[in-house]
Image (cartoon, rainbow, N blue to C red; front, side, top):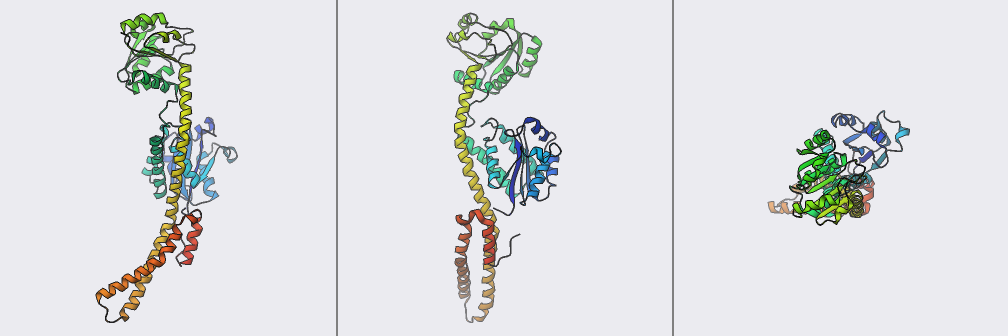
Length: 424
């Protein structure tokens, strides 16, 4: 490990309540906070991440409690006193910091494990740090590595493939029925938030022609406008059912608004084309007996919750595989850092060997009369080979696994033994 320390300090959704996190979250972008962070003494490189679930600083700095205190002060400002924020703040150093960053990038530290938004947020934060020249060789390498770790986790596990929200679970079920959602027609009954969210997912997956049927036409018009759709009254419901494929119902009605007997005659007119109903209202809007009709598929909120719970369990299994990948990549990065620490010493030793060879050749060759040009080349080559062979074993020792966890001490001893200048 180089002489500087990699530090990661922050708060997240696991240990810090929203009322504290919202005091720390950036509201005006990264530029000014990064400039302020750069004024902390002892930092060589720095990076800042702010999302609704976490605020973290990642730095390469000279080791010391002063730097950690200054970074904590930067994070909390006047929002909390040290006594107040002590229970929320986490501080990871070196290998722990690397491992934590990889866990965050792979969304294993997210509120919803496997979500993909965090990687985009990490990259956006990095773009700012890089643009403002806050990062250097260590953090550039570390952050790029975190992105590739996240990509590897996505490609080698199924951690992001199962729906873990009610609205997205509805999409997953719809795909099982229709295969593709391309050009499917959607009817929203009610203009509630859940129906809106489901419609967003449906349209995002290729559905078209959104129709909103609502008791209050004004609300229906507002929601329909969002999806370039049409608004109709509830009294036009049966007519619309002949034309659509997917129905999302979420009214506040006290009882069932659509019965089996209402839908049965419609299926003949539809030539038995499938109808997919999602009932996310409580109490339910749709008659459970609809499921008795051929080519009619009805799922209520409990069905969707069951899908979500099953998928969460699947994600937990995949998270075990993903954690193993993170462990492996964190160890690789630790090795890279260890190699970085000894590189200047290896170069200095090689340079010293070459200087000795040149000095001895300059002193000895003039005394050797009668050497041909070829003889001189052979002598020079022999001197270089002797030094290379002498240095081979010490260099292997310096790179060896046995001293990897004590590289600073090992490098210092090595430099003393070979008379190299102390590293700064």
